[in-house]
Amino acid sequence: MTKKHSTVASQVMWNRLISVVEEQAQALIRTAFSTSVREAGDLSAGVYAVDGQMLAQAVTGTPGHVNAMADSVAHFIRRIGYPNIFEGDVYVTNDPWEGTGHLHDITVVTPAFHQGQHVGFLACTAHVVDIGGRGFGADGNSIYEEGLYIPIMKFAERGEVNQTLIAILRGNVREPDQVVGDFYALATCNEIGQRRLIDMMAEFEISKLDGIAEFIMENSRRATLECIAALKPGQASGSMTIDGYSNPVEIHVSLDIQKDRIICDFTGTSGLDKKGINVPLVYTKAYACYALKCAIAPEIPNNAASLAPFEIDAPENCIVNAVHPAPVALRHVIGHMIPDAVYNALDKLLPDTVPSEGAGTLCNFQVSLRPRTDIQVPKSAVRAEVLAFNSGGAGARPTLDGLSATAFPSGVKTMPVEATEHTGPIIIWRKELRPDSGGVGEFRGGLGQYMEVGATEDHEFDFSAMFDRVDHPARGRQGGGNGAPTTITRGNGELMNGKGKQFVPSGGRVLMAFPGGAGYGDPAKRDLNLVRRDYARGYISAQTAKQDYGLTDEDINNVDEQVKQGEEVQ
Image (cartoon, rainbow, N blue to C red; front, side, top):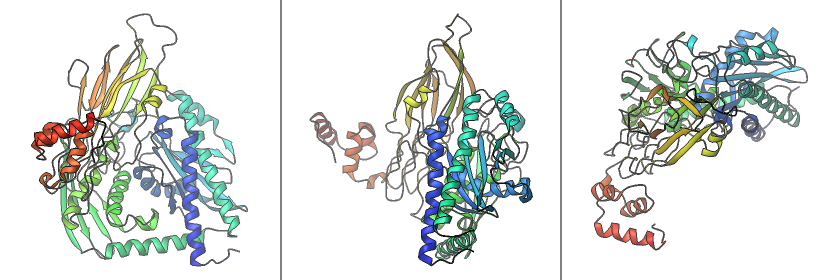
């Protein structure tokens, strides 16, 4: 029999559940093969009640993964069926519509058993470096071209791994050891989460999670509704234009703040694209909910109840509600822009609350390296797939500068040069902050980055670009300036496309400048001490300091002298 616990004890158990899934996520980081997981943290982990409702998520991870994964366990239950759930089972899928949005994300679900009884589920997701098909990029015309599809199925039954699935994986991907290794890492991280969950249940002498689940859901729902009820009801619309693939994409958002819910509707948004930048609704919901929750109820932990009052809708077959078999490989390129679009509307209802626009989408690229074919190369020259996660600048906030080279809204980390170069014969010639890329304002936008990439002399490569903000830079608020746009060129200055696979011969280089976040407020109101500090640190040029912020030549000379003398400019 499950003991009844006080409110204090229930709160302790809730905190323990969050610790359980955080250890689960850290175990995945330590054991994963792909650098996207180990170095960038492109993952999620969560614990679920026996009915599939998410009770807690790890702090480590991305909103796109965990908020999308909040819905996925229900699909696993429906597909597998309770009579077929056994102790020692592990389930898997990369279904974009029943998982987290594209084939490169592997979602693994493990049923948790305590004293022989099924008590809940552990789930996790990670982005793998390759899943076959055309490779990671926007070039596919349908989901069938984008890689190997794994329907919801058993990775292991009663502890026995499905070796047929392993063989199919190895036969269809370019990096079989990495991919299979990640599958085992995902299963292991759930196992660790399950152990810690059972330890907690034994310590608190409970045989089911029903009691703590009810406590979490009740308190989360009430707290979220209180945050919404404190707002003034109202309606507002917002929009933004982003690059798209061949043609610009329009995102339109209508918000309706009611007493007990917030409705977010994407009617009017552009239709499906022919290429793989379309977004399944589950991913759109994930980032729209995240944007609203950050602005309205940031202190309430993520779970099914705290997400429920945010209702997200979009017309079927618009670009943010793509249905099968639409290509969706780069769903993040559009999906990561959704918070900025939502904030464009929310700013009209809650002024002085949301940040200016930032880089939005990650500045990712994948390099497919292969030995040169025009000369004889040594046997040590090998094929390799290298995925690099990078960030532009975040938008300035109503009272603070934007963060430089920081991924908002995804939250993933920029991958170190050393880790990137370790995965294959790639050379990162340059990686540094991009001065003057943050939009001017009372609060300055975060800086983007410069990167220069090539390969060792025995290799040529295909460069798969996944960029946006080339033609539509981040927009400022309240008089703040726009951020700098993305640029991408070859070493000889020839322009390259912001999206798509492009060949680079041996000795060639790709030069990238990632976008900056936009500024917030009138730049004439910026504290001149902050302007002097930015100039001293190389964040802005002398020209910007003078033209946009009003620093004098004397100020510039004084700062130069302080820097020369090794003095810190406050």
